[in-house]
Image (cartoon, rainbow, N blue to C red):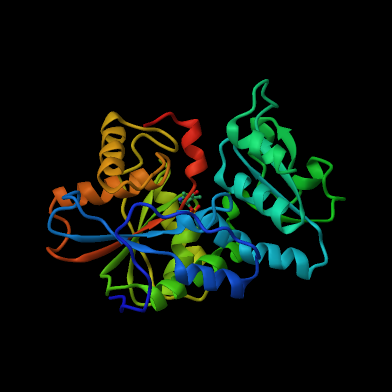
Length: 325
Ligand SMILES: *Cc1c(COP(=O)(O)O)cnc(C)c1O
């Protein structure tokens, strides 16, 4: 169980995002301690005490878990005397968006390698990224598949850029360290003792980092991609690298058709959740997270009165790609 710390919490809907003015570990840790925990009322999760930690409020642009993943990557870039972050992602990537926004605000260059040929009309995410000053580099889907290869940058003639490369989604050890810090902050700041901490998973790095930081608390990950079985293996590899012996639970069956796919039931649930709590979600990650919890409660898989913390991992900019609400 996670012991209560001394965090702030609030029931009110009218909470505004903070605005990060620095980007170093001490500062971010301090801001993270102020993030509110919100009790979810209104009969959404009958018989269970559910709270949401609002890391979507960390910053309006450098949002949620992507901010924590960037933190030690940017430090690494600076320590190496480099001035550019090179990374990759799709046209609606939260990681691309957060990286570009951080580069503009904190004074480093950003280069985004984007999956697929340059479109005639940019997604809202890419329009923002370009406006934030990110240099966009479009590659064919076939070429993009080689993004994990050691010579990926060389194959694009980008090896001469003085950049620190971050893999897709911010999935590296530095990314994990940022989420481990978030886990430590949750230990210090949670307003009540939580039995379980839940979050949505893409690469699984956030799940691994949180487990490493949270220690003994039970952590539950909800994969949003169809390749669910791969996540468990990825997570255990990350945890071994981080020398963490605990294994989080991975709960399959809630990808709703795959990455960025939706079902009518998911959409209905998201709209209902947003109406009742007045907390905005996005359909790729956080809606599936809350939906999974609701279905698990319906199925009788949770002990009565247990206390669950859901992490709002941000990424609301992605709502613009998937029309809802
Ligand atoms: C990227 C993202 C995740 C998943 O993080 P991973 O570390 O890749 O598992 C969850 N929620 C949101 C909102 C995200 O943008």
